[in-house]
Image (cartoon, rainbow, N blue to C red; front, side, top):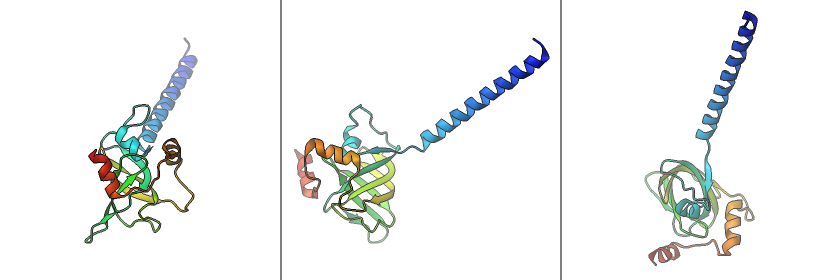
Length: 162
């Protein structure tokens, strides 16, 4: 092989290796920043395909704030509340100022880290902005079961005691 072809071949190989490394690093970075969405039922029971989040995984959870479940720490900005869809409730712990539209019985989406099977440590809480909006995943789950979304703390405790 003459020197000119060797030079071209080494240049093409270096270009392919560099491009492959760039794509690999890009995919790794995107995977690290991906927050998967779960409903409270999917978080506790797993998704229909069998996937279940691991402790420490970043995720988003959406549902309705359970009536009577909001607990505020009077000494700080810590807030704890339960979120439910049509199944079990999940506890969300948050430290910060909640959105103005946040209230019991309202739909929210929380971004955070899974602490255990039914607890999320949120770093951001978003409240829905009008009465008609509902996250698509929750609306789909509601259509399947046709159950009301307004749960009280006593109703949830009664359903878990059985």
